[in-house]
Image 1: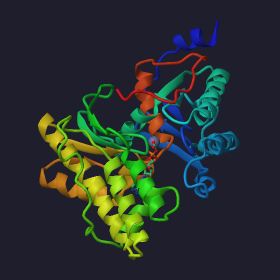
Image 2 (image 1 turned 120 degrees about the vertical axis):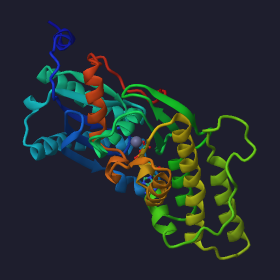
Image 3 (image 1 turned 180 degrees about the vertical axis):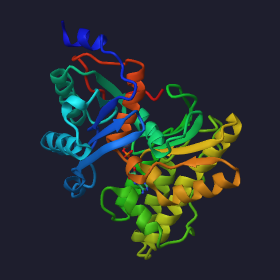
Image 4 (image 1 turned 90 degrees about the horizontal axis):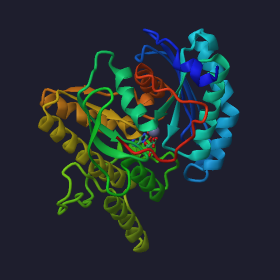
Length: 350
Ligand code: KG4
Ligand code: ZN
């Protein structure tokens, strides 16, 4: 019997233990999740410091980093959960979106683990994984809810109608919000990764620099965003001041940018929550780790009597636990892959 024939006959466990493997960017992340909600282990080995001197992720370095780190990350996770490979009921892995060479390391490794243990291999969408981190934050939270999906590659307001149905209400027409943070960081002379460094600098400044309001005269989707104009305005402000020899207050630039970039996300998400009659609002993706976003969203949601779900910061940025959490949902649907599973640079958000 072939591997896939055997897997197709696997009886589903009531409370499965799933290993989540994530290698889409610069983090080699492996976690072990019980029943979709309980984190038994969570390990991350990052190659971020190796990318810092290049000002951004170098795909080739990321792939090599995963290749050298993945065995150790798996071993550490098993050890910290006090489990062996035999105890794992299924192996969930990010199949995309992300850097192809980086994804292939995780996909190939997960295949080998699944094949050698005769356990299911579960392909997971990275973005669905970010949203599934919500279920790790609060064991009682259930759809429907609105999430602000804000990462380095995506920016969208998503209505999570049930565990499987995502209704993308609107998204960015150009740059992602995380990408804008990273670019602004660069022009302010801050190192990679930019988001946390912009936040740190912003905490020392004030919102006093006038920056363009996004999509002011845009008559398209009411939940859409555009970050390229804001990013360019910041870059122009810095360059123009420099060329005129005017000293700028970088902390004020960071703070003003942060306000413009985040406020619009919160406003549109609150509007969606109200329009759809939901009582819960969540954040997902790396920008969800932003302290200003978390604080402001909490204050505004409280005003409206909404429940706010903020995954811990380490579960907003890339991690293996979110892949295990989404893997659990796919396990319940028997969404198993055969050994031809390939990595995908792009997966539509749906
Ligand atoms: O979700 P993520 O870890 O990877 C992607 O799937 O893209 O998101 C990474 C993005 C980067 O652009 C990073 O600068 C941003 O999230 N980010 C932040 C913060 N932490 C990470 N942006 C603003 N404030 C933060 N504290
Ligand atoms: Zn991510």
